[in-house]
Image (cartoon, rainbow, N blue to C red):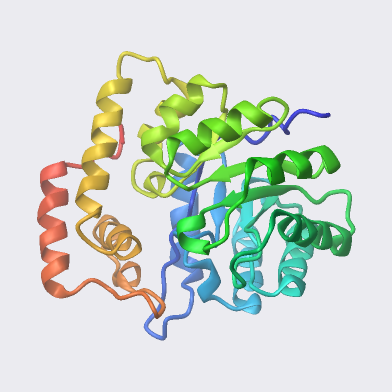
Length: 306
């Protein structure tokens, strides 16, 4: 089996998605955010994942936004696109679009509407996607987030898909936030593939296992800090960095997570577009905005170090 494409390493922030007054995607503000993250040392960007409210947007919105970022100068090879949809033909359409533009890969959930699906059904779904996309350039990052999707990936499924499609399966993003699960995946399939975690508190441990990167929501705000935990897990500064991540997550944990992330970004950019979310998510109330602002002022973001 081939090894994972080592070009995919480093931090790939799970991008937040800013919205205009009509709750449409603000391409200008999103492009600015992407440019800042790449300038902060991020290896790439992850578009329309869970943090980015991906399933709340239509196929056209997702395709148009991806094209706008590339037209704005973001290299397609630095974009990992979540192409997950409840309907497999739509996943295929978004995946074909991403491949045609030269994106780094497609982040794809298992089929997530029907629950209680056996392993073979999950395997069949990925097989169907691979067959219908029918492009040797297709690269898939498997996506395990059962607490959100309601359907997860077993170690057996991941191992079988890797066995069948070693040149297609780019890796696994495990956002279960269960370190034992992440380690079980890693022991089963690393090498040849990689297991990335969405829980920043586990990044340092996984780096010690040989993981080269991560997809991180926290990296929207703390890109340099998360980057150090991935690339310098044993550095003298690592315990302080990890403690700072814990503090930041503790602040966000008092609110709806995506809305809180956006509240922090609204102050960073001084732009109300970051405060808006698509239903069914709820935006922060004025009282929550003020409370979050006070907590973040005490946290004291350092743009040159965080």
